[in-house]
Image (cartoon, rainbow, N blue to C red):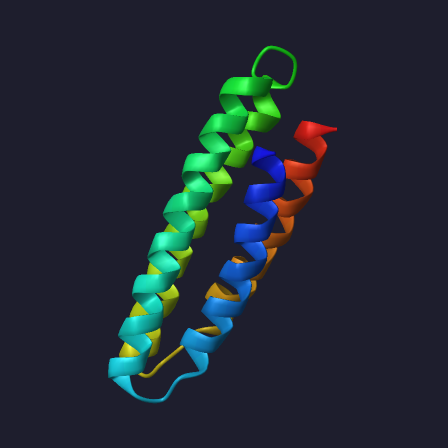
Length: 112
């Protein structure tokens, strides 16, 4: 259940982040930033619950998923800050995509 909730939240996060980063108005960017923050905090909470549940047999991958979810929050803040300063860096966006794909894969691996 927690893994499916995490995966659903990740896909919603992808949509919200794409919409937020492509906005032109600073006011709209800030609104989508708030939505992204709520979602990545929920992802972090669900990853911690998954870590508690699977830590007896998949401890290292569960901790790695927690680190990735924290990194997801940091990259989100970095990308939105760069967007508000009107110089979005491609390396940060690519890093965000890699973290999302890795988080999806590790979440699926941890619960199977």
